[in-house]
Image (cartoon, rainbow, N blue to C red; front, side):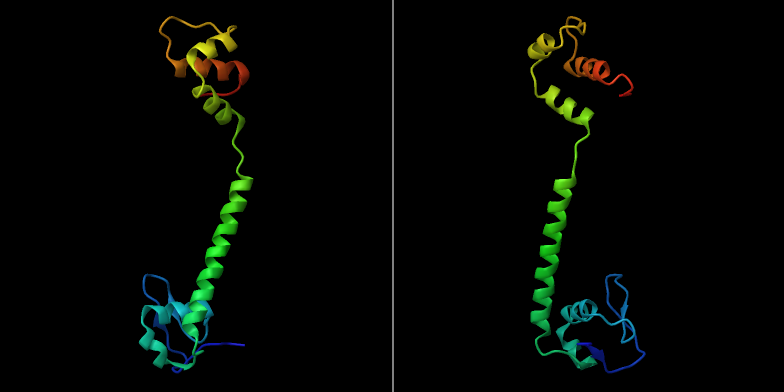
Amino acid sequence: MEKFRLKKNGHKFPLGGGKGFISNTDMTDEKAILFLSQNPARVKLFSKCPEDWQSLKESKQVDLEDSIKEIETEAEELEVEDPISKLRRELKSTSMTVLREEYSEIPTKFGQKKNEFIKKIIKSKYPQHED
């Protein structure tokens, strides 16, 4: 059951901000609430509008915020770091002295930069990887 109806049937009103138009043909609660939020005096343009439309706006906002939080949580749970990035991160947080000890089979040069040594370590573990 529709909650909102414009007085002028067939007329389209711009929503502003490039968000399209509102008309009875494509009316949704979200569009009507957005349209009214931009200018509450527009309530006069509606033949049908809940008196508590502003509380609907707040409940829609709460629903939207909850949905965003759920999506962000799901994305974090699904986020998997690829093994090479994980290894690189771990190696960067390790001192050069410890790296030399742990990877003594990899030759180092005096004054070699840590990033160069890390590239050699990754290459030894993942020969197919191009850095």
